[in-house]
Length: 114
Image 1 (cartoon, rainbow, N blue to C red):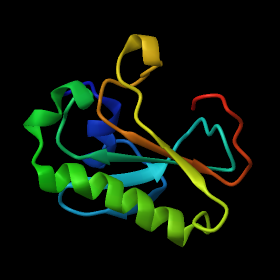
Image 2: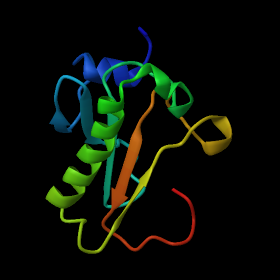
Image 3: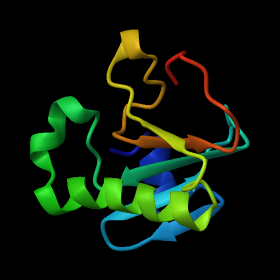
């Protein structure tokens, strides 16, 4: 997809503060953080949301969560806790139509949803 901001980041066309990258997944800091630590973990392949997750391998889907957990540990979130969220669709406030996981932490979270 040529006009997807996350595809452009994965292709190196748009700069991002990357924390992780391999052949399948990229993770970078959110430009509009909702907490002191707010990282996005996304597949490099364009998939709109979890509704289209069948187009990704189980390996890549699992890797998204493993990378989120690895980064949570590296960023010092493991002990106090963190939130992992994937918004799916308009009513869930998915603002970029490319599957991504929010890794959010560094402050106490309330009962509100991310």
